[in-house]
Image (cartoon, rainbow, N blue to C red):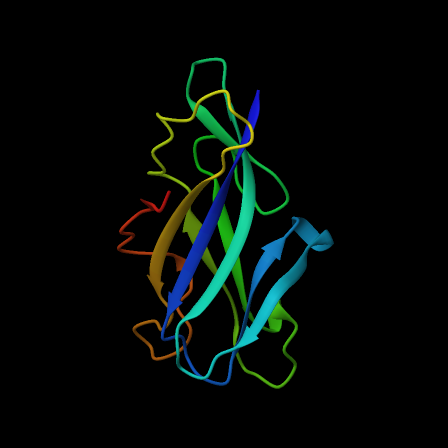
Length: 144
């Protein structure tokens, strides 16, 4: 049985003048949605992902926003040219792990959608957009 959860990703104070967006799809067949140009204020991205109980009773994540192999799933935020911006030197992606989402209380009611939120830094140590895997990653907090 499949259920869905809603993810809310808050990108805190990302580098100004740069486009950020949520990656939908994989490989060369992806598109960037919810594209936003940063003005230095927090940006919010939201997406629904499907979850299913696996053979070993662990949950796994599925859907067009989910990247990576089982047990190491994540969501990408496209940055600069990866988000379709042409007037920028930035070509980066930010990998947000799906690990740590507590799904123990998911029941068989497909109509109930749980909400999880994470907050990640939008600017890296070099002053440019944060990229690669978020570190340190504070995880996901249930909002429902």
